[in-house]
Image 1 (cartoon, rainbow over the protein chains, first blue to last red):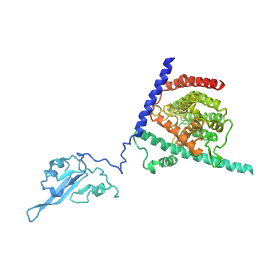
Image 2: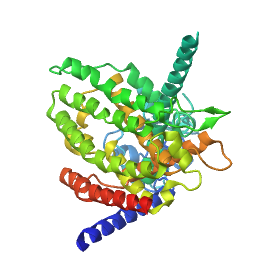
Image 3: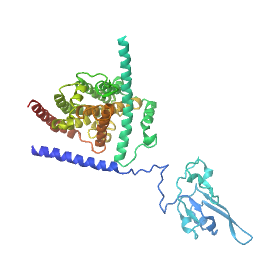
Image 4: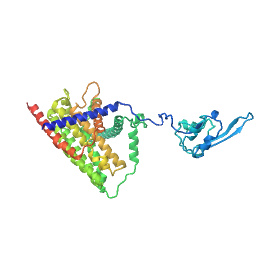
Length: 146
Length: 324
């Protein structure tokens, strides 16, 4: 008989402990990120779209050579002052496998992996990007642009 | 002429009650999602309206527009009428729920002198809808859920009624208004016998509404969704409406019988009544997202070995205290 009441009391106490646990959780802030309006900052070593600092480029072509899918195509010309100048720096994102080799091999850190990850689009042409165009990633960086 | 006027008043009262039930059920679904989300450190619905308040409206529109699928092999008539049997008794109970008064008008459709008895009689019919759904679906999981539900409802009706009898003994009346008026000095929950009765009522009410931790009739992990597995669209919405209306009713009865009903200082009676009712509903939601489901044998054992003896003992002590 005593055991019967002890069981009831210990059972009720354990329920109260459980209720306190959930109550404490209720007071905590939610951990959800409201995605399109709130975004997590990407980590340092995240490999997003390839981007170029054109002024640092020394036209060594190592990135185009090491690229396993051959998605980079570069041409340059020589100016009358015997300086090299980029003519095109095409990046075909359809082929890119985001391996980061171009970033690693570049001697001047001219080509690098950016933090852009929202890279879906409706048009194939938009995936063939000219890295010399300063407006190239404006659509992906600004989600409000349709 | 009087009969026409009475008829118009009946229509208005009926429409008000139905409107209240629909809005209340939608609010409760949203509230349940919010409570569960915050307990799990999430936010719940946030997109549709301010903090997702219109999420339930969107869900209802979706359910109304969905195809009403009738599986092959169902018992057509029983399957068709089950949702109505589940909802109609819940609506009928509102005849006796005292919402208090506003501008001198008493907000109770009809103050029957057998109020609480009427409520208990009508709520017992809800099980019929559930059992019809389980039987008519021609599906072993649905039938299992319905059988469990019937067993559970019958077992928990006894402690539920015994705890209500304790209240009726102290109030001296079965009328809901008189029970509220009997608590004008002290709410019943503050008397020792009735506090125990309140706990028993709360546990039994959880079982009566098939809510966690007593949700074995629709145990997701065992029975898919129990008796409403085969239902879709409008009929599923009816079951949902019935479930949340039942939740409101058991909480409203708890507020009326134990927490002084619509009585309270400063605020209007209706507001007090709704605060108490929704407070108890929130408590039940808190239980739902805290406790694990009990097994069938634990469920039956708890009812027959713990709740029923305690409520009998409580009733005897209350009778002795009243006669002393």
